[in-house]
Amino acid sequence: MPLVGIVIGSKSDQDIADETAKVLDSLGISYESSVISAHRKPEETRNYGKNAAGRGIEVIIAGAGGSAALPGALASWTTLPIIGVPIASSDMNGVDSLYTIAQMPPGIPVACMAIGLWGARNAAYMAAAILSLKHEDVKKSYEGYRQDLSAS
Ligand code: RP5
Image (tube, rainbow, N blue to C red; front, side, top):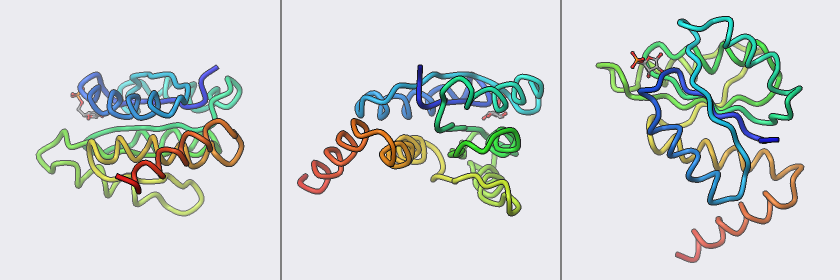
């Protein structure tokens, strides 16, 4: 059963999901990947958010571009930690998505990463940090990565 659910708002966001998946693979963290649009597939968005915890998902990474409702919409259906990645798919180059994801009103938080590939990578590391609180194997691989980073 995967620990992390990667969700993107469109197939056109795939490079962001791939970048996150690459980091999760390098840390040995299990994940699943889905394409669900908050505005084109509202029912699927609800079902994913409602059922994720019951399926064993512990962290959701949600990437979306434009007026990026997906991370907040998922957060409205679950108390799992949601990590949002703003994607530069519009003429505003992701600043629109950054503001959308970061500016969640109090009570329904979304952790907002950097725009684009940096954010995609950091979303995986943030997931690792959260999972490290409970999973000793993840803690070991994430701490190992941090030590290697420091040494390099
Ligand atoms: C958002 O709108 C998606 O996350 C994507 O970044 C952007 C454009 O989507 P497409 O028109 O390429 O499907 O919903």
